Amino acid sequence: MRVSANVRELATWAVIGALGAAFAVGGLGYGLSKEGGQVGPGLLPALTGGLLLLTALAQVVRTLLGSATPPESGETVVAAEEDLDGRTTWQRTRILWTVFGLTLVALLLVSLLGFLAAFGLLVLVISVAVERRPVVPALVISGVAVAAVYAIFVLFLRVPLPGGVFGIGGEAG
Picture 1 (cartoon, helix red, strand yellow):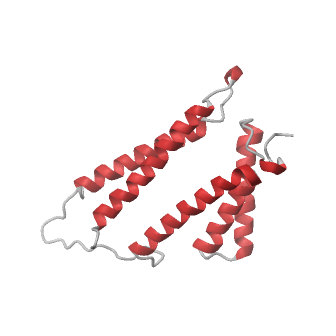
Picture 2 (spheres, one colour; picture 1 turned 90 degrees about the horizontal axis):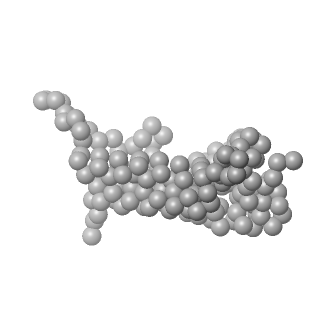
Picture 3 (cartoon, rainbow, N blue to C red; picture 1 turned 120 degrees about the vertical axis):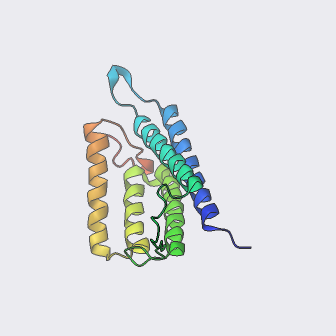
């Protein structure tokens, strides 16, 4: 049984929308603000989850309605099988599900390693295993990403991140 591309696309956007809704609800559970009007630990997950849900809903509507602008008369419409990187639709879908799986593993590792270490490993594994980047540049990108997250959340917003069993990176010094 062959599933049409539209059904696969709708299923993918439904999963993304469900993840967005879960993040939004989870973020609300952590609280959007703290005493003194500071940003709460749930603000960013709630906002990001809400935006992800809205984006998924918009894509579902777009998929259901089809192309908003029909081709002009005499114009031939050719669907590109490969993207700019030479990846087919199947490869892009496989990569998307791989990233979802890796993200789930990273989320499960947060309680053990802490958020910063789990996030750094996620970026590193995606860069090397999924995107096929060389290890040294991937390590640099991971380090910069972890430093940026630490600077934004811990130092600037004063949002403590889970430190895991080692307590690394959770509090500003």
